[in-house]
Image (tube, rainbow, N blue to C red):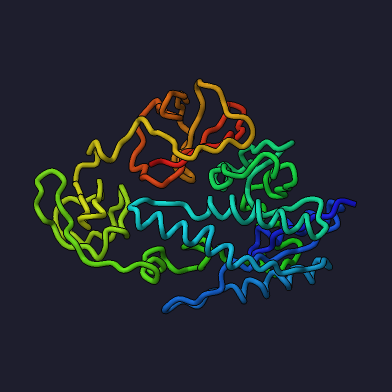
Amino acid sequence: MTRVYVGMSGGVDSSLAAALLVEQGYDVTGVYMKNWSQDLPGMKCPWADDLADAKRVAVQLGIDFKVFDFEAEYKQKVVDYMVDEYKAGRTPNPDIMCNQEVKFKLFLETALADGADMIATGHYARVTEGKLKLAADDNKDQTYFLYRVTGEALRRVIFPLGEYAKSEVRDMAKARGLWTATKKESMGVCFVGAVGMREFLGEYVTTKPGDVIDAQTGKVLGRHDGAIFYTLGQRHGLDIGGGLPYYVVGKDMEKNEVYASTQLQDEAMWQKEFRLSDPHWINDAPDDGEYRIRVRHRAPLVSAALVYDEQGVLVRLSEPQRAVAAGQSIVVYASDDECLGGGIIR
């Protein structure tokens, strides 16, 4: 019997994933990954409650349950990376790094060493022979966050929810009487629950106020509380009253200045070409040619040309995309819904 270690976060998705694996005849062990336990001002980290919920579901299902403590590695590989990227003026995605370094590397290696044959998670994606495919529910598809996982790792991975819609998952969990069937989805920073990114960064970086400047006129529009907190295309949080809304169109970390504009068509907000740094291909690197790309989670798939030259990988879009900030990822898809990989914008 195939032995599967399923990552159980204490949420409904991973709970149902575990239940489906049991029903499908696997020898299932639930694993809670203790990645973060630090409280922040005004926000208690929910890890203990999540662990308790995961345990309750494991008891309901009659499966073994373990806790893998990855907190030190998580701090180094995910949190420090994220903070350093923000300090450099970029907008990283910690969920992508978590999947690359923790869930589908450290968890996989630890599970295999402990006797597992496969691992599973509650991600909305499909995998076939090491190939990553879009989930059946396009609105919940999470392949964008999984593009840095290796094909070798994916050959040891099961995604039980890949064929289901989120609405079905809730109903299926309720039908099975799972403890977490009505639990709300966690929001905010991936590893600290409901706290916002601004509050989290405020604990790790020293910031100082600076000017918000009109990109067209050079006029000082107001003050901000730290350029690190602002990203391209941002509208809220500028605190500039009256008239048309302003959008962030750039920033200078050395000068601690944020540049804003009322013009949605400002050329700084729209880009048609991107160079990918640190490209990662799940299996083989794709050839030059036409593909589909996604510039952020839930953004529509748009056609683009992939070009290799002496400087690396160039992505040339068929139509400009709005507010794609440095540090974010562009993910590449084939015409048959296979996620090929992607890279980070610099």
